[in-house]
Amino acid sequence: MTLKRKIRVGMIGYKFMGKAHSHAYRDLPFFFDLDVEPVLQTLVGRDAEAVKTAAEKLGWLSYETDWRRLLDRDDIDVIDIGTPNSSHGEIAIAAAQAGKHVICEKPLAMNAQEALAMWREADKAGITHMICHNYRFVPALQHAKRLIDEGALGEIYHFRAQYLQDWIMDPNFPLVWRMRKEMTGSGTLGDLMAHSIDLARFLVGEIKEVTGMAETFIKRRPIGEMAGGLHAVLSDEVVMADVDVDDAVAAMLKFENGAMGVLEATRFAQGNRNSNRIEINGSKGSIRWEIEHMNTLELYLKDDPEGMQGYRSINCTEGVHPYAGAYWAAGHPIGYEHTFIHLVYELMQGIASGSNPSPTFEDGYRNQVVLDAIGQSALTGSRIETTYESV
Ligand code: SOE
Image 1: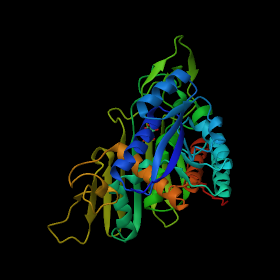
Image 2: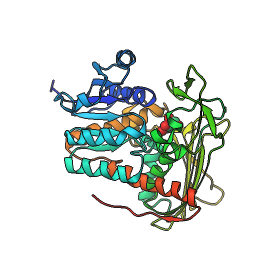
Image 3: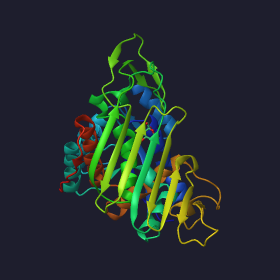
Image 4: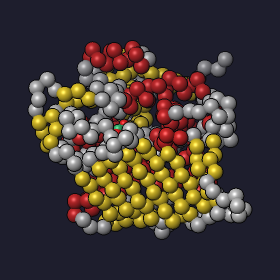
């Protein structure tokens, strides 16, 4: 038996995303054959009792209460950032300067300037850097990418995306970090629309112009904190505070290749717990995808014979589809958690080969430029051209 090189992870944050990432590191070797092996070395959280309990439950070897202590340790190879958005920049830059590989939750930063600084430091350090846009790792969307690149849809005219949730519709739902500008940067824009923008860039191409519109329906809420998943608890004492981020956002995009995009993200779409959908229309065909049926890609081809035309449902659990062969026999579905397994698979391969798998911090930066432009357009009512810098 050959001994595999161990890639030792230090992860900061252990709630919703921390659970998804822990599961991914644990299950990765079960399904994929790699030359390296992830080790769940140290979990970090500020509350000693809570992080200890989380480390035991999620399978980490040790825990720590200050992320800075990871930096000098030679038994940590990669730092995984799952904290609120306001701390991504500081942690990622310090980690890169300490020579650690970095994987960071989305959105990459509080604004494009900070995202650029993170990308610059990561590039300078020569580390592997990734941002966690997990949905591009759905096998059906990887297949969509392959079809588009092969020209099956022809020239792309439209990209349409909706990301709809309803978890904060109750006016008494607490004001948690995800609704506080100083910690999150924006509301549905950075949290949900960032995913649609990633899919837009992945599948269609770079965005050159945006128009945005945003709304905050509930202006004041009682303060509270997240309590796992998308649940929250109120503070003991009822203190009301202003909501200073968007509850809903809409955007129109122009792509460099001439396509146009229409995007909508909201936490006020009653009945939609986590509805993430896209549709792309091209000169030769169209695709449709939605997370409720995440293993199915719907494809329409205009050259199908007369009388046979219509959307077909491609079941992407077949081994010929990207990542699908690692799991079960055809027809046996995989789920949300597997998208994170594919993400950390790419991370581990990247670290092993000294390469930078997409989506990188550059993708995070370009995404952030689009987010900032949509936010700015929503404020000013004007159309904004995006400009991108390089490092
Ligand atoms: C909350 O809106 C959330 O957990 C997002 O932060 C994730 O990115 C999204 O995939 C599911 O919903």
